[in-house]
Length: 323
Length: 282
Image 1 (tube, each protein chain N blue to C red):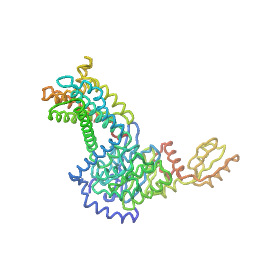
Image 2: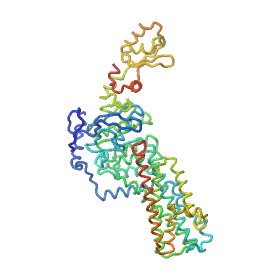
Image 3: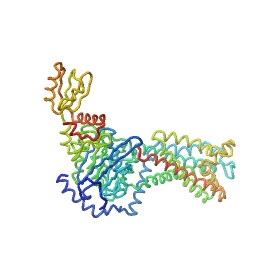
Image 4: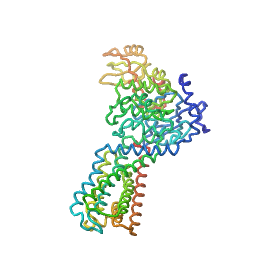
């Protein structure tokens, strides 16, 4: 194994347990800083989810990990090696966001071609079973439905029996049923001790699959932890009402995590609806049109990343915002 | 990490120890050759199933030869007959289309729509992608030439020694290379939608000005002066020398010119590749 020493501040750990490592990585595209000093590790047998809105830097991170682009700063290691080295590539599988692949080739031909790149590919029947593409082997790629195409791309990602799998928004455009089937397939893959990095903008997806979630916003990690921890920090209620209080006054109320004006009303996001509501009624005798609803996880998450971005306080951890 | 994952990790770790030592790639020559072969096979099947590619590249040379080559096939022209002369012209016409479009449109589309990234993220040897396209272009060219030559012999009264046929075929097949390089340059600069019109904009005027549609000696003087700056002119002069038999000293000039064009287009493609790398497209 490599003797390279890693950035200080990490608990010392044998590199053998680390599948992928991102150390102080920054990536710039012209004037845009896509990633700003990002560090994280993916351990063996761990499923890590990179969660963030479009443009948060998720795909950039995946590209860097695959060696498709070089970072401007920082180090990236895949099993202790440069991601561009053939040794790293042989142990990695990737499902990228692809517009189109050669549509006249049959599914079987695509899989057979990709399998021969790897030293120990899975047998075709195993790939077909794991990716749930039974019966599609002799169909041209172009004739498949959106969900079937995604599954074939998944098959290409796992055909080399990789130790580390990258899935870049694998379920975008899939209906709820296909998404859940897909989750089952991904889970089955990790149960064999593989590592997975999954990028998604669905918190629900990260929650259903990941051991660790990293929330990425505008190129920085704004929160990280287990799904339970992340959920606890964003779950809450939304209070809608008409009030004379200003937005700033509302923000000053203890327990309010964010406020925004919406169609002549205000929307208050809070983790302690009862206390905030009592306070509102005390402050504003004219309070009307009150409506309290549970905030969807997605909504709460989007609200917080939006606020983070608008306030340009990327260093603020999500927990602090929610409290 | 949770415990079930830990226990399941063990077989994977032992496998690592046997197959992987410090990231050294264990791939035998035989495995590498298999990748190249499979890559070329996939490329060939993929193209063969695209009527939009096969029909113009294979049928147009045959069609043009039938229209212009058959009526006065036995008339003398530039030291040979019209029937033989136009085999070289339309053969090159086909070879250019096959290689220019396979690379120009192929690379632009596969790059622009993300497929190239999937390939680049995989451990496929990078050159296999290009080698496959070259091999496929040569195989397509060979098929097209066999059909065209058969038509020439049967209906165009084209007669020459066997060595001349072999020399002509070999010259035209090697002619794939400069136009593959030209296509590569187009593929790295054009987008997936603009690549095909751009290839046509290069292909048709270039073929005309090089004397592939109308023999060069019948073109206006101005065009005759432009022709030496175009690669098909040099390829067609070489091909005609093969038909007439013998090797003239001017062939060295043509060989040098074609090599120069190839190098120029490869450098252009490399610039396009660098410009492209790290951006949205792979």
